[in-house]
Image 1 (spheres, rainbow, N blue to C red):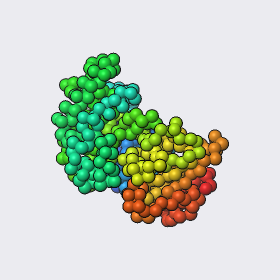
Image 2: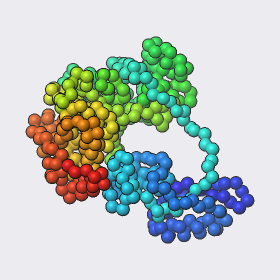
Image 3: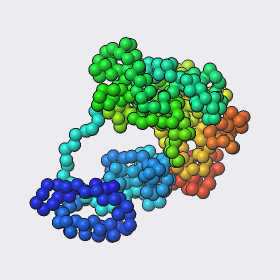
Length: 435
């Protein structure tokens, strides 16, 4: 729905909601339908100048609201006023590149109205994230009292469980679990809130004893009851995956939903975060370290891959590897570049980085940023891309003992084809980059 604020002749401002699909018939048809409705009701819209290149607030696309440019439910984004799309796949017709490497498309076919500003009262209190020491302690305690082994068949030994992914029994103890029901999760949140009151009383006093406020994933309802994760029930328990910083402290967690709780086209992995809940907090998108950088000399080699769980599985098969994980190909590039700056870099994103044009564009963006950073600092470190045949992820490849090859950037570029090649070529031309 599109919200239109209008003024009637003798009455106060009024808000009407008009289905977005009414706009998508044609530019002229949309305007005519809108003007007819306004004239019939004697409304006086306040017209705005042409929309700016990029709008204010943005959201991610989903199955229910796919990208209006490519029609896909992943990677892309759109402005909250529906006037701008950030498409990660199609560059034809775009106004220019976005900061995350996407393509900015402005929808001039949608009628534009602007209105005097209104005063709104925020529904949610802005809660700063808790200090790292407290986050680490709470997440460590969560894993201790509700380990994945509490749901052995569902999360450890069953199909898709930790052991089937290649981890050993003792390694499975490093992961936690959330109960499937809202009531059980609320009980867990209460226990952890008491833990903070006992161990960090000064922090708990900031929120009247609700010690978990400020911990990503936790929130408090209007009756002062604390909760963790969403206010709904699931069919199966939820796996908790810690993301550790360079000192080994847990800064945030991801969760993995069970296959029975994932809708068609839904995401398996989510951040354990609660920014949309009352007194909740965002997790951000931190990167995960499997090693302590201060123990690794400059000039050594590190591997970048997608997901902390995948990184841990990789080092269980290749113990000498030094791996850093990001939540996805488009996430945390600045953090990756800073963390890998003194080292030679092997990029081991999923195998579709050779065929998926959106993934290729993000990899191309990371390569450009890394190259620029190295030149500015006069570093001679190398960047290569790991490829293999068969499984999508490098964790499955090493578990199946499939050979890995490291390509230079030029070799990787030479192996691209069709849309993937055209997307990388266009992006690098915009960035004035040559491999």
